[in-house]
Length: 221
Image 1 (cartoon, rainbow, N blue to C red):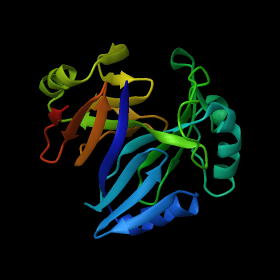
Image 2: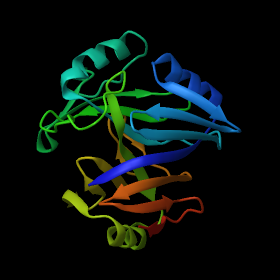
Image 3: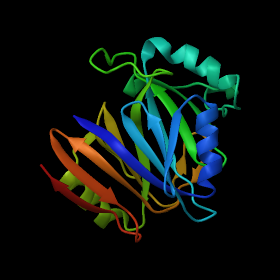
């Protein structure tokens, strides 16, 4: 089991981004220069970064609440065309998943994803039914070398492609791609920007950071 306990993104105008999350119903607090967004059991941390920095991050939504969450989101923000015929919902049959997307004020691609086959009964029920950070997308500058190193720390999930590898499992995924690959749903070419995170992998803490252009890893039990 892989859980994304915390994720730190270096974003432009974090105050504006934090207010966007607050408007959507997330609990937000500020400590020093860091805004902490409570994404269910995960801590999303926003730190001042470069103007052009942006990321692709996804949140788990309980299956029974997904339609209501999407309706609430649609009443507050513009959801991106993502599916057939320009619909806002995209289906992933192989992953048994449904998702919707939006861009926050800093240009981050934010995804709300549900997997109807996954039971969340053991999780405390947060409001608005978002349980945790589901995914973080990380473009790799040195694709071959950094991918090989990442696979030493996290298991490969599903079927890897030449330019898309999901590491982890249902509970949490670190999705790595080479720079330049387009992110769903906009096709915007992925670019490297600094980020870091703390993961719980089968009882072991695993940390990653890409602060200097290279994805680095460490751990402790």
